[in-house]
Amino acid sequence: MADPMRIRAALAGDETTVRILMSHIMEPGTRRDASGNLIPAHFIKDVVATHNGKTVLQAMFSGSVAQNPFLSFKFKGAAKGDKVVVKWVDSKDDSRTDEATIA
Image (cartoon, one colour):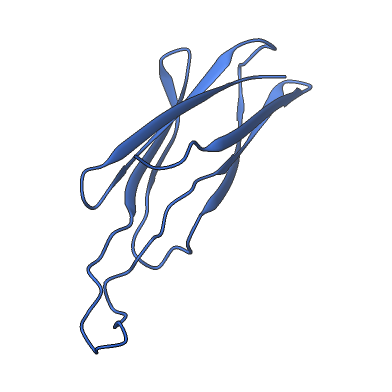
C-alpha cells in the first residue's frame, strides 16, 4: 500500500482550498531500465474528492503526471470541521483513501 496522502483543507470566507500531495512512483511505461527493458506503467488513473458524500473533484491522470503529484483545488459550501475524503486508483488497481478535516 502506498504512503498516506498529505491533505490540507482550509476555509477562507465561503471557499475551501484543498491541497493534496500524493505519494506514488507515477511510472509512465515508456522508460527503460539499465538493461534496456521497458519499465511497466504504474501511475494514478483516477482521483475523486468528496465533501459530505458529494463529489467536489473528479480527475483522470495519465503517465505524463510527475512522481508524487501535487493537486490543489477550491470549492464552496463547506464548514470548519467538515471532512474532505480523497481517493485514488492506479493502473494496477491499487487504491488509497485518506481524509482531512477542514480548518
